[in-house]
Image 1: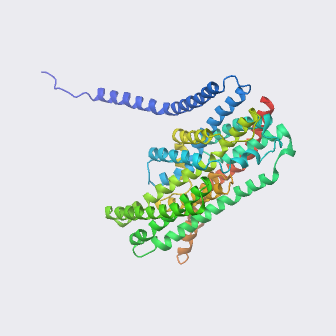
Image 2: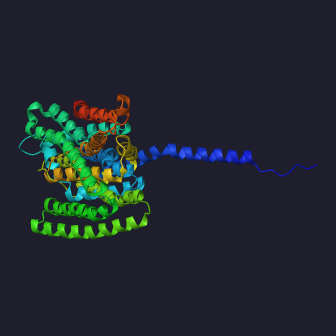
Image 3: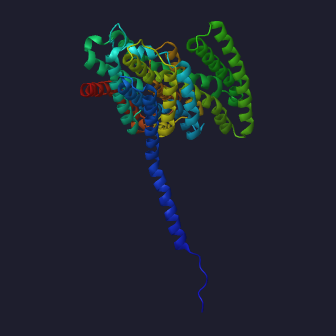
Length: 472
């Protein structure tokens, strides 16, 4: 009697195991591949510098500065992309890969169009090498500072701690400057102004985010027909933001006359209002359920706010790379401090590449682990952050975009807690354990992030001082 034909379940299972093993091996190699791509980019920049400089007497110093500057830009992108994209991804408004690509493009635009506003303050506002120009001491200080800041930021990215790149480069310049020139070379007034900006900017962002959240509740979410209210008010909010953004960029970054900037801003605002009105109406018609429609309505504004924040980040944090590079070139060539045209482009491309290669882990942390964000709350966070950073860039003030972004997230979270407590006053008192469970801002992450901020400046300064003593 012949045995019946059988399928081959064991073979199928073994083939499945092999497939799973191959998939796991590919996943495990992804970090190595990304790091390899980053090293290739650094090597290409170094080789291009060697080929362009030829037998320049300071070729070693310049190549080292360019290589480490590129690495720092990659590190900034990997660490700070969470500021721009974390809330949008956490709210589900945009996919991670698409968001990284779009925000990367906006960071390049911000660095090229508006990246020079804070460069001068970082280049000569922390230590003063002398009245005769940056000189060789300035070049050596900036090379050591680049090494130290890049190392510290890389460690923070690996530990998923969103530390400030601005804190890192300021601390590193301070440490290298003190070892090279002594304490008398420190510009304490400028350093105090920078520090004040670090303290004030997250508070401003938090208050703006909480105020925007309250405004959305008054104008839209607490109305009898929230969708009709959203159709009425959201286009005006988007138009105002676009108009202010275009006007400020033309006036402050591109040095256009105020009349030209105002006309362009009004034109852009009108176009944004029409487009937003059409998009919001379309989103409302596509969704049959009010809750789903309300979530969809905020997706376009949220993506726009994320792109605006990417531009602001490129405009402000690109100076962390441009300032050291300009000082290195001026010192190596014994010339005046000058920003070469390719420096903002190199900084922007490096930041964008770092965001795409290394930014995924911190995007998830800022977007979901501090306080859970829906589209409306994430919109408030990003708008407050972008407005604060753009205002600081126009004022040539180097602020920490990490400070500002996380301050906005905290502001929304604390506002929600205050609103929930106010609404629950008439209810029975809750046990202490239940009150702690209902806290919307996770205190452990608050403590972790503030701890990272407090240690960044002294840690980067000590690391830079040690490198300066060893290398120079």
